[in-house]
Image 1 (tube, rainbow over the protein chains, first blue to last red):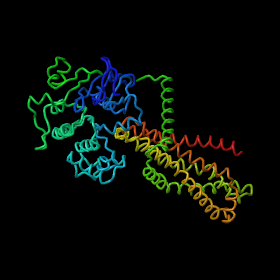
Image 2 (tube, rainbow over the protein chains, first blue to last red):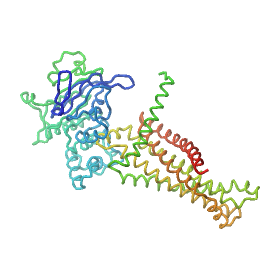
Image 3 (cartoon, chains in turn green, yellow):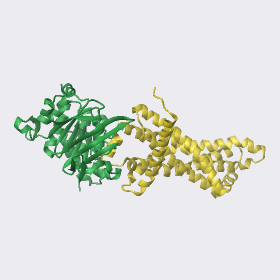
Length: 276
Length: 258
């Protein structure tokens, strides 16, 4: 039974993609996250905002069980990540894709081998691997880089290969760690368009860490148009149904968790400073 | 500057010993858990074994030759020049062959492992591997440990053999001994305990080299500078551990064989 006890009674964990309950973690006695609680609904994209060092990337690593919290509970697709050992986590991680800040592509493997890594580990037939790798690379419009090495790619291309590697197993959750960080505005828009396409075409739940506020707002105000194969602004009425929310971190605590219009309307000085 | 108390240093070192012990244990227990990366083991065996062959052959040959050359004046003083083969074979098989090969492979491969895994660590590739559902200990550590342990065993046998050839060349070319005399005494003087000691050591040294190399690689912090630091530490620690382990193994086996 996927239920957990929280402050306000029982929480059904299976119907949520990710649940953080009072999570705290410190590094060398310096608290980084202090009682962080939030929920990510299935199909929802949540943009994590905060200054550098506020613990945004740590939240993503905690979701995958790459690091363990000092206290609190984390549920991913109904599984209590904090209570699972490494062996159990490997199975769960197959349902969650992550795009790392610096791509973290295996530099001694080609693009094809990088994208196919998970499939090769699962001993999937070669023909199926080939088809799925091409499909994933076509999604990020990088089919021509199949036999190139990461060192031969630009920063933006590496991020897109990272996205292809993350989506190849069609995960239920995607975690993006600053996918537009350090990229020019045009490449950043391409990356955001891919994230948007993944959200609208495959209905994947996602956590998006970003320093750029406009990334979150673009996701909240646009949808993917399959006809033009580009994103388009959505009208005000449809805006209510778009599952893009925002979470702002400050000093290890969540100071805001809500929708775009709520974020703009909030009275907090720090948030006002941040979004302006 | 931050003040570090002796208790902090002790705690940090104990933690390092614990982490190293766990890595060593996992590298062995992973052999009994699926998946087993046989292709990676073969690739590493080629890299470590075949790749180290030239330096091991060269070092072994010259070591055998220099043993014969250096000790011949002393042996001559006692009229025992004919025992050159015995001196070279026992010294090489029991002691110098395993230690020399171990140190050569440590210099070449412990550094290689630490820098490769260290680079992967600082560029988040190890985290990416874990995030992709693959255990880096199974995929990266166990194949290196198995390959180094197996290949050091064979490399030591080759080093012993070429060392004996080096000693033989010196004996016939400069000391005036004949081939039969050298080979006969070299073969006859070797006892089971000598060969056993000489073959147990490389297995242990191979395990030390690979686990130390992987440990420092996986615990690399601090970017490219950290990779350089890990590489140096891996070679230094592996070399010291080999010499220390050599003493303890020699002592232990002397206890059993007398």
